[in-house]
Image (cartoon, rainbow, N blue to C red; front, side, top):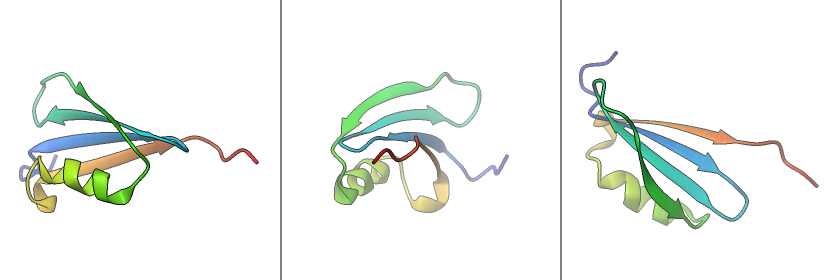
Length: 67
């Protein structure tokens, strides 16, 4: 693990919302932060709460697109 990472952020992306969970580096359990709208600015604002980009690792999950 990269020692400079302070937070891990998980994003669960849906058509109309993005659910956010955060875990501090180490063995702490993750915690649900909340649900955002599907706009990029809201995601960026939330991610900035956890520090500079170089200290935050982000992953996302998005299901299959349905027509």
